Image (spheres, one colour):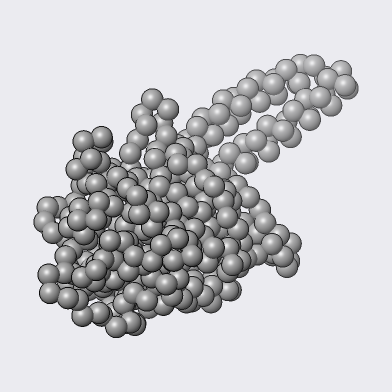
Length: 423
């Protein structure tokens, strides 16, 4: 959530930056400033009324002590009127504050200055590419056909048990999943992230804290009776560890990693680009989360990018990095880089990771602060990234490592799988 003080001091910048998201924010920003002026006016009136009431109460006490009950009783009538006035002002103030917050909740984060303007993923900028795209043998198959051929993922069984988008991993397919999770977690903990095992459901406050609510409620599975949400990513419970927390400056930075299943209702469209593992309702992901000092967050962002690069180098998968345009950047992010792996059998790029800096946007919602060198509370910066999302990494491995004799396991994963080939 943007801070009102920031909006007031940078009105033109905010409007111009939100235009990168294809949002005409002039009216919203003017409404925020008007609501805030009304809030301040009501707060001043309430403070003055309460101060006058307190002053009269002291005067009444002194009058009773001096024996002037008649004058004291007359003043008591005035304090009763002031109490009613203060109650009315307090109710109006609460209504105004709630209206202001509801408006602020609808305003997305201000994109970083480096974010290009654009409408969709077609306007994203490729900024880096690495790895050789393998030449496959004649008759090479997409991963959903490989999964069936080697009996390692059963999409039809998942559809029978639950529905489309809930695959069942079997035998060496399940072992390969487990190997990837363990490898990702080992890489992350070796880089200084503390591993957490996190809840798979969160409350409404957690959804608001990281920006999934009210923006993405339609994409989350909602347990209505308990008003809980199945997590779309470990970012939500992992970042909410720090909700309503004040850290000391010496505790920064903080790094968290965790593996969770993730759940997303988004239906997607039909066709090859959503077949198999390309788009699922339930999938596994290992996440990295950082809480940083504002002066260090973009250096930390670069470090997270290098960390994901290192994993993909070890997996020997061809990949590229995209800087997302304003229209494709998530509601809460200031800057996002997407990693995509090349699926040779499908002849297309598959998104496998998003690394984002949210600056103070989530921290303001979470009330996540640190005590700076002057002893004042200051909002921290939050960052997160996929390290990594499994389905499309697995799809890339199955397709890019396939041979006529079977699917070779990347060398770095073989100590985790206990086998070298799926055949």
